[in-house]
Amino acid sequence: MPASLCGTWDIISNVNLDGYMIALGISPNLRKIALKLKQKKVIEQKGDHYIIKTTSTFRNYTISFRVGQDFEEFTKGLDNRHVKSLVTWEGNKLVCEQTGEKKNRGWAHWIEDDKLHLELYCDGEVCSQVFKKKVNE
Ligand code: ECB
Image 1 (cartoon, rainbow, N blue to C red):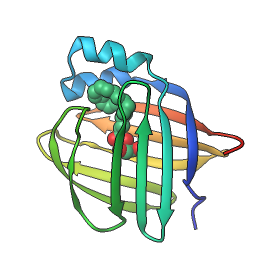
Image 2: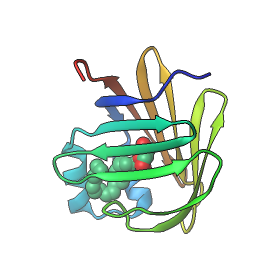
Image 3: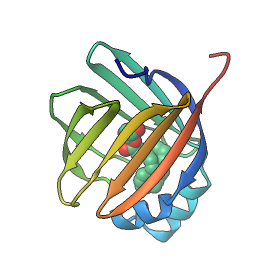
């Protein structure tokens, strides 16, 4: 079993979020706001069912899914697109493919050295984020 992704996680590094947002067609004003945010992840899991919340002082974004079951995702407050998403385990990585207007779009989460890693990708751009577990939760 891969290490659990569950918990509350604070971002400690964020590389190429701007490139990812440009690939998604986000406006310069919104990108400027988004780049200043300290994102958090709150991940809950029961069996194959996951809830992933991304939170910030500006906007929050939540998805809920079962591993291996595709679902309709509306990226409300992000790029506001409709995609069909499918999350599966690839080795120790929880991988999401987001099929829609944008090519090669998705993300992958995994644990490495007790940190939560996330790659967000779209159209050849990759944003790499690392989160550390919040203590005293
Ligand atoms: C929700 C906090 C960020 C709010 C930024 C607001 C506006 C910018 C518009 C689009 C930017 C695109 C993405 C921002 C980066 C991350 C947000 C969540 C990305 C995501 O899909 O996370 C997955 C994997 O953890 C679960 O939804």
